[in-house]
Structure formats: C-alpha cells, structure tokens
Amino acid sequence: MGEDAGVSGCRIERELGDVAGTLGRAKAECEKFRSVWIGDTEGGRYELRTPLGMVVGTYSVAGQRVTFLVEKKPRVVPCALVERVLDLFLDAGG
Image (cartoon, rainbow, N blue to C red; front, top):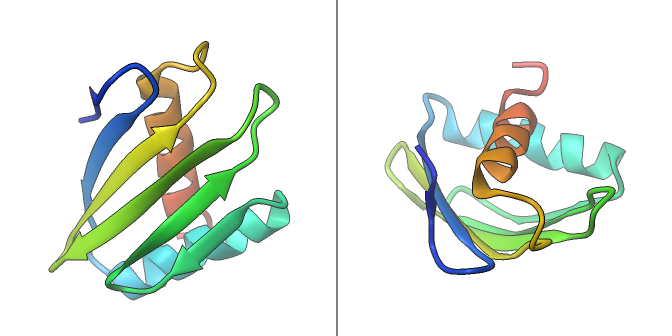
C-alpha cells in the first residue's frame, strides 16, 4: 500500500502483470484528461491534473514492480487519494 514520503510526497508500489500494456493504458488515460505521462518500461514521469491542483512524480520499473514517487501534490490531497486515482489510471480499460 501507499505510505507517506514527506509532507508533499507519497511512495506507491504495484506489481503489474503486463507492465508495457498497463503503462500504455495509463498514458492513454492521462491524455484524455490533459495530463502528462512520459516514459517507458524502465521509468518516467507524470503530471496528473486534478480539480485541486497538479500531482507530479516519477516512476521506476524493476521486473514487474513499479514504484511511483509523488514529488508534488496539493497539501489537502492525502496519499491514499493519490493512490486510488493512480490505480484507476493503471486499470483503465484493463
């Protein structure tokens, strides 16, 4: 599960069966919401638009495990909510 990584950030880890397919779906979902997802199956960065402000971070891939580090988020948005939204992007249409 996600855990706090400081005042503004979060660390979220997920095991993905199809890393390339799942990250591809996440990128497509981001584009629908005018958000940014740049990267590949080794790592990258994202900027997710929310009504409360941007959620910005990076991700890295080691085998099937993807680690998301949230570097910036609105102070009023808890890590649990960021984790839930990220899961929705990762599971979009999958």
